Amino acid sequence: MTHCQHYGICGGCAVDDRHAIDKFSLLQDALARAGFLDAPVAPLVEVPLATRRRVDLAATRKGTDILLGLHKARGADVVDMRECVLLLPAILPLLPPLRDLLRSLQAFRRAGSVVINYLDNGPDILLRMDAEFTLPDRRRIIDFAKAHGAPRIGIAVGNDVPEPAIILANPVVDFSGVKVEPPPGGFLQASREGEAAILGAVLAGLPKLAAKSRVVELFAGCGTLSFALAQHARVEAYEGDEAAVAAAEKAIRAQNLTGRVSIARRDLHRRPLQAAEMAKAAAVVLDPPFAGAAAQMRFIVASNVPRVIYVSCNPEALANDISLLRRAEYSVLSATPIDQFPFSENLESVVVLGKGK
Image (cartoon, rainbow, N blue to C red; front, side, top):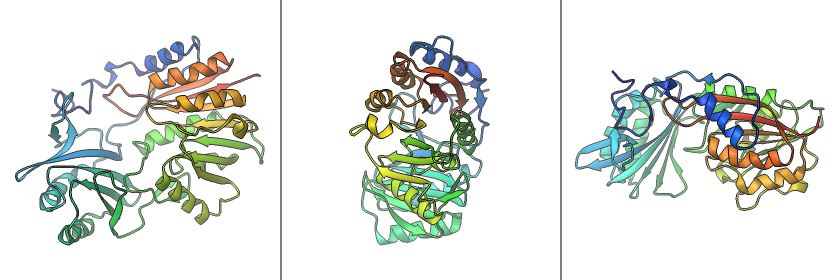
């Protein structure tokens, strides 16, 4: 008996036993490869099952058959999702009517995707299809939103910028008491529980701060960490995605936080923040994508900032990136492994590094 009927076919889970991969050791080993042989590692934080609020599903059409789910392990075919122990219980009931909707869309010819972010006020859905949306398509999408309590459904052809097909209510997510309207299909931490664990470890890793202390945040998204950090210091945030920056800016204005937190659009892979721009910060906090922050790290080192807090979803990239900090005589003050991706080889972690006394 496996934990899911799709296990062994679907590529979403690598193992059948959640504890088959020692994720505490994954972080410990990554730190050792970076040169931190005796780094303090906190006990593993396990995020509960059935809490994942974000899913990116592939869709294919074969005649009248609609397959909606994740790709097969080591294959391009789509496994039609019928159950998933990871997802919020409210998401699975949306899949059968979504298949019916896709079947009716002229914009869906062969392949597309459906991104669902389950926000504070319901499912925010993005449909990426392979042909233009017709007027009847748009009417069917509006009817679906009304029938299933979706505050917004966005649409896009291929990799085009999404547009809203219908907004019944402003889609909102609460980041540390600040209401943010994320872009369609925008990045969120996979679960609220995982986000809370990350936030707790980041805030615990901050140095002693004064009212005018400055924290530089890199790869800020639309404010997952920014608004929590702003309760402790002035935050100067940077993010490459235009829609995410616009969402954060709107929330900053709405909450009158202009003097407390700012966000600027910047591609930190192509145009890293320079050392001089970080030199007087009390801390640098970064949450880079899966590939890490290789282009940015040498400038963080050169800034000589006293505290670096690195949020990682990839132990390999983490090891590569913080090895530069080890050579610059930083030490690991704390490291927290967070199992936000059960049954997979992925690991979320928060590593706090300090320099000097």
